[in-house]
View 1 (cartoon, rainbow, N blue to C red):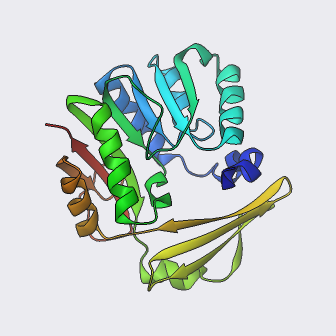
View 2 (view 1 turned 180 degrees about the vertical axis):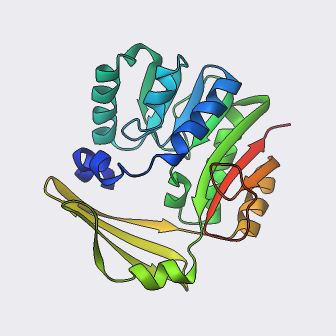
View 3 (view 1 turned 90 degrees about the vertical axis):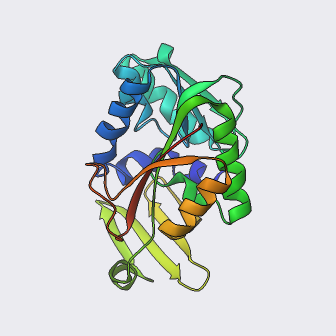
Length: 233
């Protein structure tokens, strides 16, 4: 069972302030055309707006609970017919279609604990792309200020929803705990540098088209957030 199952009903209230990436991924989806694959589709925070724009989406997630919420959300938005939701692992997604775009939003690749898993996931995504197809994803590498401000403290992220970040800078792992009235969970995330992401993408066979510092496409300047666009040639 995925750790996200325990907070499936809590996830949308917990992440309600995260909105900057929705327009970015929707624009990229419109350029690519249907269908596209979203890895780590979760509750449909990105996929449902894309489907509402008239674009068919295949969504893969390892959490049955999150997919349940996604189906409910899609039904309320009237886009169920444009969402094909599948339970699976982003390292080996249950997808046979060939696609022009694969996206992995909201730092989902940080759930991969080492380079072996990263390579496996990236190669799996590349296999699904047609020549010229693109992989787009975002990740982060925390700055010292982030670590100092949040380490070991329970902080109220949204009303009634608390999170605690325990950072291990030696192993470069984050143990993130979330709790609220309807559930709680703890998950592990692992970060690497921009140079290391570039290396693992190239080892997976990708050509790197861009690395932005935010969803407004500003150049990456060494800060926390990275938005990668890589293509298959």
